[in-house]
Image (tube, helix red, strand yellow):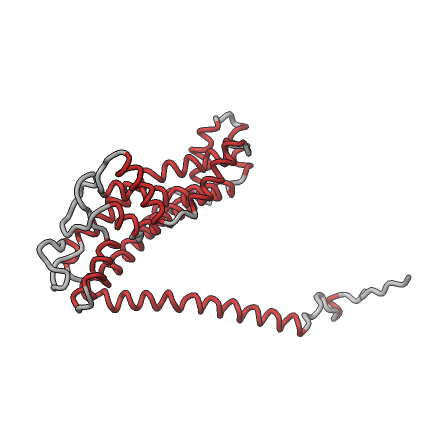
Length: 304
C-alpha cells in the first residue's frame, strides 16, 4: 500500500491548511443568517412591548403624585391620584415572599449538592421541586386559601399572598442555586478540605461566594416572576385604594391588582393612562431591582 504525502514545506509555497469547500462556506453562511434572523425575530416583540409601555404609560409616571399619592377618594374613571398604594403593596408582598423563600431555596440547594449524595431524601426533594416548578399560580393561591384561610381561620391579607408567592419562588431559587453550585470546581472544595477547613465553612467562604453572581441572577428571576402575578392577589386579598403597610390586616393592593381594577373600570382615557402607567411602573421597578442585584453580585463575587 502506497501513501502519498505532501512534503513541500509551508515556507516554500505549500498550503498549511486545506481550503474550505464551497458547500461548507454556504452552510456556515446559512447558519449565520438563521441565527441573526432568530435574534431579530426575538427582539421585535420585546422592543414592541417596551415601545407600547413607554408611549402609553409615560404620561402619568413623570408626575410626582403618581409615586406619592394613592387612589383614595379618586374614581377609577377620573384623572388624578397615584399608584403609591399599589407600589407599597407590591413591595411588601414581594419582600415577605423573598424573606421566606430565598433562605429555604438556597439551603435546599446546598443540601442537594453538598450533602445528599444521591440519597433517597435528595431524590424525593428533587422530585417535589420539579413538580412545584410546574404548579400554576392559581393552584398555589387556592392551596393557600384552603389551608391558611379556610382551615386555620386567618383572614385574607397580603401575608396570604406572600405565602402563595413563596410556593412559586422556591423551585426557581432551588433549581438555579443548585446549578450554580454544581458549576463550582471540585478542586476548590478539595483544596479547602486539605487545609483543614470544615465543610460548612468551605461552603460559606468558598462555594457560595464563587457562585454568588449566578445565585443572585436566579433570585432576581424569581422575584421578577412573582411581582407580576395576579392570581394570588385576586384570590387571597381584597383590592384597596389606600396605602396599607400592614400585610397581616386589611385589604392591600398591588400593581397587578391595580391593572386589573383599571381594566374592569372601562376604556376612558384616564383609566387607560392609569392601566398603562401601572404596567410601566412594574417594569421599571423590576429593572431597578435587576440593576441593583447585578451591582451587588459584581461587588461581592469572587474576583478572577
